[in-house]
Image (cartoon, rainbow, N blue to C red; front, side, top):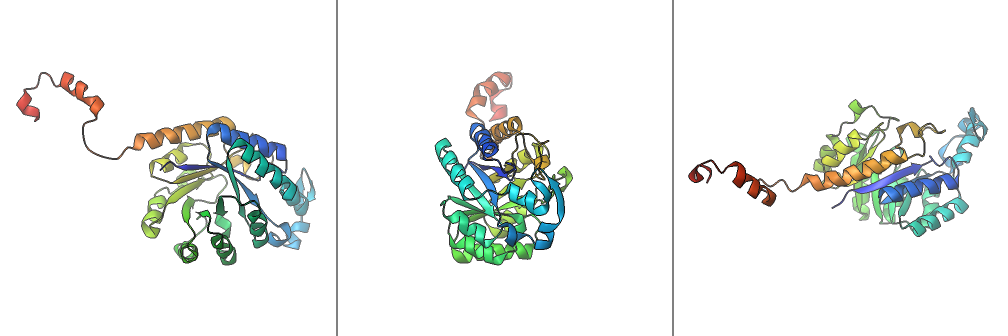
Length: 282
C-alpha cells in the first residue's frame, strides 16, 4: 500500500485564497494525495483576554485581528472545494472545536484529522468518529493513556482511523524525532501508523518512510520567510517535490525482505563465479 502523502497548508495561506490555490498547485504537481487546512471558531478556541491582548501583524495590533485575518470562512472554503475538485486532489481540515467540525461536514470531505492539540478533547473525538470517515489522529504532546482513550473512542464508534507519530515543536530538532515510536504505536494499537513532521529538511521524513508508515504529512509553504508561526517548519515547493519523489523511490526500494537471488543477479553470479568449481556453490 502506497504511503498517503498529505500537504499540510494549515494557515500558511495567510488568509489569502490565491496563496492557498498556489499551495494546492504545489501539492498536485508534486504528487501529494491530499491537502489539509485548519478550521477554528475564534471565539470558542481563544479567550476574550487573549483575543484582546496586543499582537502586531499584517491585519492589526491585537490577537483577534491576527487570528481573524488567518481564518477562512464559508466563501473561501467553497472556493477551495471547487478548486481542489477541478485539480483532482482531495482536501480536508482539522477542526479545533465542535462548531468548526460541524461547519466542515457540509463539504463532505473524504477524510478527517485530529490535530495533536485536540486529541484530549473527547467531545470533538466523538463528533468526528460519529462521521465514520477515515481519520488521521496525530499523537504529539500525548501520554499512552491519552492515545488509549482516543483509540477506544474511534473503535467503539466503528470509525476507521490511523495514528500519526508527531512531535509538537515548530520546528522540531532532529534529535527529538523518536522515530522508533512509530513501531511502538503500531505494536501497541495494532493499527496503521503515519508520521506528521515539523522538522527542517527531509531526512527524518525519509527515515519515517523506511519504517513502514502508511501516511506522511508535512507543512508546505511558498517561502519559509513568509509571515506565520508554521512557516519555519514547512517545506518549500522544490523541497516538497523532492520529498514526494524520494518517498515513492523508498517505497519501491523496501521490497519484501526475502533472502533469494534476484533474477537480474543470475547472469552476474554465473560470470563472477565461473572460476569456482560447480560443486562448491551448490
